[in-house]
Structures are given as C-alpha cells and as structure tokens.
Length: 249
Image (cartoon, rainbow, N blue to C red):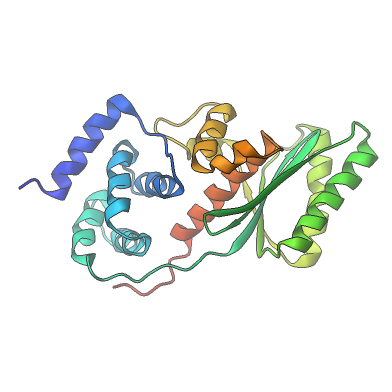
C-alpha cells in the first residue's frame, strides 16, 4: 500500500513539471498550507488533502507540526491521518475590507472569512482634492453598509507614488476613528502567495482570482476589484494560520 508520505513525494515530482495555480479558495488555502510547511512543490497534493480533510483537521495537524522538532511537512502528514473522525471545526471568519488604492482609482472587496460578499471600485478625478474627497466618501459609505472588524491595504514603498500615498493616508483617516484593525501587505508577498512557481506580475494574480471568484468578471470595477479580492483572500487565509487558538486534539 502506498503511504501518504510516498504520495507526497510523487506529487512533488509531478509539480516540478506542472506547477500549481489555485482555482478555488480551498485550493488557495492548500497552497498556503504547503508554503507554510516549506513544501510548496507539493501544493497539488495538499489540494487533494483539502478535499479529504476539513479545514479544522488540516489546521490542527499544522499546529502539531509546528510544535515538533521534526521536518514540519513530514510531521504534518504523520499527525493528519489519525485526525479522521475528529474534527475541531472552524469559525465562520471575521469580516474584512480589502482596499486597493491606485492613483486614479480605489477598489474594495468585502470578505467574511474566505467568502467574497461584495466588491466595488471608484475611479478618481485627476484633481488631487477631488480624488481625496471621492476616495474618503466611497470607503466611508461601504464601511457604513458593511461593518468590518479589520481592513487590509497594500504597502506603498516610502517615497514612491505621492498621489497613491496621499489617498492611502486619507483612507487610513477613515479607518482609525472606527477602531478598525489594519493589516498592511507588500506587493511581493501578495504575488508570491498565488502560485507555485510564484507569479511574477499582477496580471497573473488577476487571472487566478477571477477563477476563484468568477463573479468579479461579471461586475464593473476591474481590475481594481480583482486586486482587492486577492488582497482580502490572502489576509483572511493567513489569519487561519496565525490565530490558532483552538485546543490541540
């Protein structure tokens, strides 16, 4: 009988030739799990595991793997099989506003957990004052409609793109008074999360996220809504690994 570790090796060998691009939020979770375990080449195998085990079971095995001095990927698989029939479940996830800011546009995606609830974008005037006012009004209205515990923004390197920086500061001025938690993500980390091998350009990520959330292709607001949704999915998925408060099984 082929063991689970033998299947991992076979999947890794296959992945070296085929690569992996997630087509669903579940597959994106599996890709991030593989990356966290230092086993990105086996992402396709982890996607198969995500069809067999619940998110709660996979996270429990991941937590056990972190507590070990053994190779994390190997320990993960050793801990996973005994978890069949013992599922801690998983929370529905908090609500997040992912905000993508460009010089002439703002895109927002609202996610509850990994589920995309709403996406919209607003093009901005070339006039700086009008652009700032429009961005603030747009974000304020969405946050009034969708109460969010946190918000995610992409980091703008210091000294780069003055107009984007001013808009981002104005948006942060909306978020801070509402006690909304803020997460900032670099473009490099965001792109690297969406495939193995990692995508090199934002356009590749937009194609991937449009497969994960096909509704984005049916709405106005592209490509900024695509960028916001990708940012939101990344942040919400990373939270699953960073907030492992459930008891060990």
